[in-house]
Length: 290
Length: 319
Figure 1 (cartoon, rainbow over the protein chains, first blue to last red):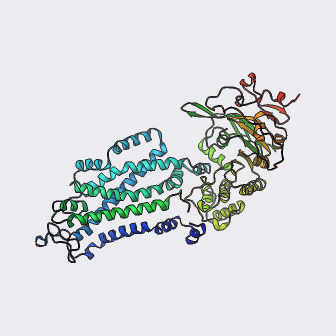
Figure 2 (tube, rainbow over the protein chains, first blue to last red):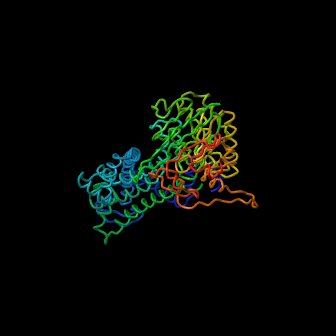
Figure 3 (cartoon, chains in turn cyan, purple):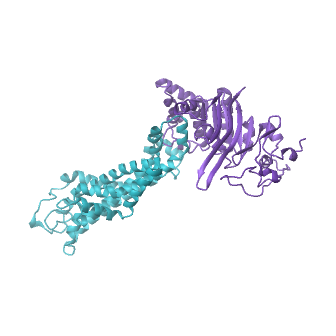
């Protein structure tokens, strides 16, 4: 991208430049549109559908997809499309809440570890190593098994499983920023330690974290559906996508649409967040000359 | 004019798993008020460490730093903050010495705000004055460092260093990361500022032609030790230490007919980790004899010309 081109657009806003680069990437548009559509679906679900997500209506069970029931009805006669719309709320909340919680804890642990080094660093990192030595899905299963199944419990399980990656990444960023000359410059103009950390180190260590956050959201949504698929996550009758997939499994030969549509939604949503995360990474990558 | 900065037997050792790294080992010199001391030597000879130790970005291991008549070697936090008003640094790499998330204006204003002396209109006035002083166009005030070229970034770094009205500035290879055409601009700016603001410089570089241009006096360093120091012109006319000779012979020339003999060096640089006593250049020196392995003294061989070499008179046919 030419110097003049980017200067013409908006001179003094780094955020605007990043936004522009994201928007210029067609795959990013696809990602953003997918995510936005699903978010809108979650918000506007009561307006978009006349059916209730949980009301049992036995006479209309196992109806194939039609104009009346876009994705058919399940074994209890509930409209699957309606349930998917309502369910996107849970998936989004699970993904976003667990990653945000992990981000906050990870940034704090990583910063402390990277700054003080020595014994503090050792203790924090070895504890996180223990968590990370297990596959995060397995770890989430263990936590859910201990805490019991439920919405909040799932967020905790996913959050704890995500913390080590976040903390490790933050620590690495801090270590590299700490060695930059502008930190020395800040010391020579009498910045206090607190000011150096808040103004010079953390802002420069955060941009890779934003990208990780975006890509972790899709991973955690997938993990959440996985947990409810094996019965440990959000419980029925909540219209959670993973739980719907499990319910449909028993009727896969007679009513394949019962697994097809929840699966499709999971795919599209994960794809959307992944594409968006990738585009964000490309746009924020400091090694690319813009 | 009197001495502004005096360094006496300054040492800076770093601990490493293999032993102590003698980055700066027993260096003494004096910088006079308003003058420029050039410090030259190859990469890794401790030039930058010397500069950073003098302005207290690192603690010294041993020795004394006397600034403006006061011993400033060991200071508490408060005294250090006062000292930092007087001593500043300009960094080598203008790409990593500016915070990429702060605008030019924010970067220049930070030291002003921290000093607590400037507020409101006064702050804006002072910022404008500094930008004008180093020649940054006002329209760039809201730009981020990545939008500027190397020369302009270095000007921002200079403005930041000047904000607190220092008396002494360590210039740590301030032009080596810049294009040659920009180098001249920045060097001229530094020299103009020296005149108008009455600054004293310690100018660290590995570029002999740059140091010739800007320095009044020169220190030649080799592996943490001072091997030769004298006035700038004297060094280029009358080089005495064998290492300085090879260093000067390596200056490239643009005259293709000039018959210049380069003095190639044999052997490897000795490790700076727990080095043996004696001349550290001895392992590569064509004149080395047994006596070179005894500790060397910096002695005044000619008036104002100090050399640390036991064979210096013999080699140069002096009395």
